[in-house]
Image (cartoon, one colour):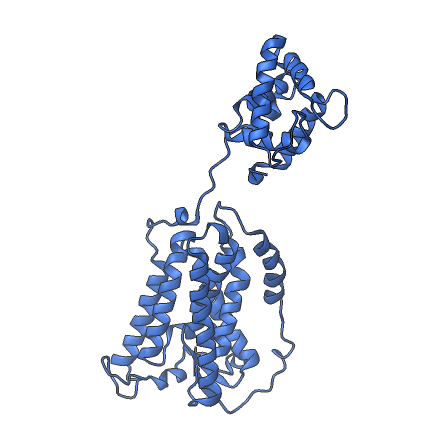
Length: 377
C-alpha cells in the first residue's frame, strides 16, 4: 500500500460503498465493462467518453497498485482502496477523484465525499512548537533565586566555614541545619514547608553549579516548547517527590539541593521523547544523552553513599524526581498538536498510573531516629 497514512476508516467506508455500486454482478471484481457502465451512469457521459475515462482510471489504479504484473483489467477491492486513498493527494489519481465526486452526487453522499476530500491540516513538527516569545524565563528566574540564596549564605551569613566566593574548596555544611532545609523529622515536627524549601539551599559551589546547569540545559527547551507552567509544575512535583521518597526510604537524613526537581525535568524530557518520537528531531541522540546523564549520576551517587565519604549525594531523591518526571511528563506535556507515539500512550497508561499510585505502608509508622545524616540532593 503506497499511502497507508491516508487509508482511514472513512476512506475504507467510502471505497467499499462505491465498489459495491460499481460491482454490478457482485463477484468481488469490477470489470472494465462494469466500470464503463458505472461511469456512463454516474457521470452522465456518452459510452465513448466513458471508455476514455475508464482507461484513465484503470491506468491510475495500476500505477498505485502494489500488485505487479497482474494482467487483465479487472479491479480488486484492495486496488480500488489504494487508488481512492491516493486520490486524496490531488495529484496521484485526479480522474479517480472526479469519478468519486460524481458518484457522491449521484448516490446522494456528496457531503461525505466533500469532507473526505477536505484538505487535511498539516501536521506540525516538534521544532515548530518552539517559541522564543514570551521568553523562557521561569526556570532561569528559579535558578537566579537559588544563586542569590547561595551567595547570601556564603557572603553574609557565614554558613560556609569561613570560605568565600572564589574559593576552590567552597563547601557549606551549615546549611543542613538551616530553617529551610529538609530534616528527617520535619513531618514529626509539623514543619511541612521543609519538604519544598530545601531546593533553594546548596552545600557547595560544585553542588549548585551542577544543579543550575542541568535544570537550565533541560528546562529551557521544555519551556520553549510547552510554556512556563507545565515544566515548572513538573519541577515542583519532582522536588516534593524527592523529599517524600527520602522520608520513606532514607529516613535518617537531612536534605538540601534542587537535584530532584532537575531530574524531574530530565525524566519529563525522556517521556517527551517517547511521546513525540517520530516528530522529535535527533530523538536517538537525545535519548542516549539524557539516559546516560541519569545513569552515570545514580551510579556515582550510590558509590558516594556506600563507598565514599559520609556527606553523600542522595541518589534516592534523584531517582524519585526522575521517576516522577517520566510518570507525569507524558500527561503534563501532552498539549502539542502533533501526532503521538501509540506505544508510548499504552506505556504511560500503565507506568504513569502505577508509579504515581504507589503508597508506602511504612510512611506513617516509621520509628523516629535520633541519629541523623546530612545529604545533598
